[in-house]
Image (cartoon, rainbow, N blue to C red; front, side, top):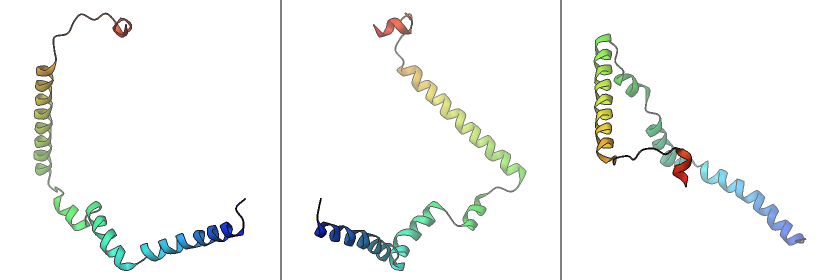
Length: 100
C-alpha cells in the first residue's frame, strides 16, 4: 500500500487538523469578532423583543386590521398583475393531448 511514510503523514494530519481547529476557533478574540455580532443579529436581546410587543387589546386589534388590509391590497395587486399578463386561452384539449 503506501508504506510507513504515508502512515506517519496521515497520523500527523489526523492529529494536526483537530488541534489546529481547536486553537483557531477556540480563540476568545475570534469568538468575540465573528460569533457574537452574528448571534445578536439572529437572536435580538429580550428587552428589544418585549418592547415591540403589543399589550392592550385595542392596539392588537388595530395591528391585525392593518395586517389584513396590507395582505388584501397585495393580493388584489397580484391578481391585477396576473390578469394583465395572462394571454387569451384556447379551449382545453385535455392534459394528455397538450403533450403531443
